[in-house]
Amino acid sequence: MGSIVMLFGGMILLIFIGVPVGYAIGLSTICTYASYSNVSISLISQNCFTGLNSFVLLAIPFFILAGVIMGEGGIAKRLVDLADSIIGFVTGGLGMVAILTSTFFGAITGSGNATTSAVGALLIPSMEEKKYGRVFSSTLVASAGAIGIIIPPSIPFVIYGVSTGTSIGDLFIAGIIPGLLMALVLMIACYIISKKNGYGGSDTKPSAKHILVSAKNGIWALLAPVIILGGIYAGIFTPTESAVVAVVYSILVGFFIYRELTIKKLIDAIYKTAIINGITSFIIAFSASMCKFISIERIPDMICDAITSITDSKIAILLLLNIVLLLIGMLIDIIPAIIILAPIFLPLVESYGMSPIQFGVMLVLNLGIGFVTPPYGSTLFVASAISKVPVDRMFKTAFVFTGVLSIVLLIVTYLPAASLALIQ
Image (cartoon, rainbow, N blue to C red):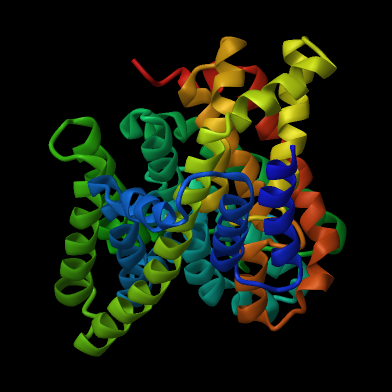
């Protein structure tokens, strides 16, 4: 029990006092190894290397790069124009455009933060011009960014698949219905709040001609998820290879079709991706080392025994598990959380008949809701950087949107068809 307290308690304490997540995980792991294990500390570096030595993980930097290039190359802007032509005229129209665009963009990048950054930069200023509340606009875009990690392709699904040996292609398919449900409930919430506050839509209703013109201008942006996902499901390329295809496609479209991508923008995109991937890889490495210690000490068995000692009801255990995961999602970044938690809780849910795929969607959705909950809500910080709204002013509205997203979470948890219906 002392090892669990030092490992997890130390990590959480370090995060709370401001130590970066990767360092917090690494320091708590080193201290726990030194105090509670006879294994040489030098094995930590070996475990770090082993955790990164996976071909599948190459998908992460390439999906990140694709997302940055698409934001710079005009693809995100055309997705906004298309969404605006379809739904921008209704009450709360610009908010719904943000949600619909986030769904489209998430189907290209697989990243919640990238989705929030690209969509927020385009729509938060526009929503402010239309007299939408700045807090509402920022929080809505941050909440819609969570769709980006559920709708396929999804970087967190890649991490989960690597951590548990689950088919990444099946995980991508399983994320389609939950991702669309997330967009639907956010749109309903957006409409109700906009109706109450008087947030209108576009001045004129679009004609069929306007929609067709927007679709024509955005056809290359719409083809991106079709090519990426279609190639995976048709067996033409693997999920990892699809990330490279996404990069090549975004470069070709940005340079030669939309002509908004320049050499300077491409170099800047590569630079940004290198920084983000460096941080991500550092976290993954130490998370893998922590996970190895968890396995050696049989901590999953101890935690599962503790949970089942409270109740043996499947409904109650899954509800309790969701509460635990939601709380963890408020404190820890999604990538280390998946690497650490998936091996712990998967045996428990499998003993109650839940498939690894359904649990993967449930786990990622829980942690995705953590994107918009304090104190660690990463998409809240991205939206705050764009809108200049202090994060603490967004918390109240954030809990409204996380409440409606929790409805989707319950559906995924207790209705297997919500994630498994499309898998053959």
